Image 1 (cartoon, rainbow, N blue to C red):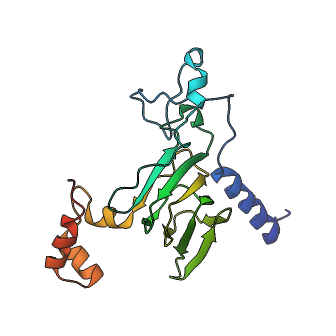
Image 2 (cartoon, rainbow, N blue to C red; image 1 turned 30 degrees about the horizontal axis):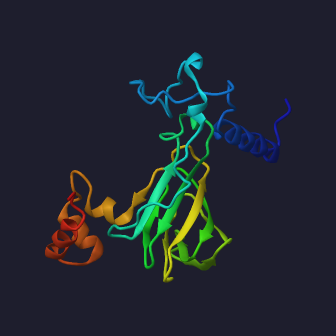
Length: 217
């Protein structure tokens, strides 16, 4: 009885794993998100095709700068499936990010997407940190492009004296954002003080002080 060579078996097994874990092809032209549906799936339930209109595929919210008069001096305006229902199942989205002089988009992650930015105006200092704890950073000027790999902590800082803005693209209809400060110090229920105190090697008194700055106003 013939046996399968180990190399051939390994190749077949690898191809099986790749094919079984990749995203499936779309089975229809579109699946416009029914944001009012109570059905919970990995994405959004589809709207009745008879009720689909051009407005399901349109969003005009990225044309103008956002207001940056906040604590961080930056504002993210998303153009994802929650704003454009027609993006449902298409695996793409955009954001516009505006920065006041000195503005910061604080360290955060996108658990479901890689991000690529195009600098529209101004200058930015950007960077991400690998799982090997290496900082990859770059100074950007108008017209430059930079990529933040999926899931890695990254940031953008406007060190210039004029406003800056970028268009960011994601390979997810809803990439999700976890800002490290707000996640660790502003969660509900809150992360126990003794956990954060030991993790950051500071007193629980200092932890409480930091948490107070992340509480809803």
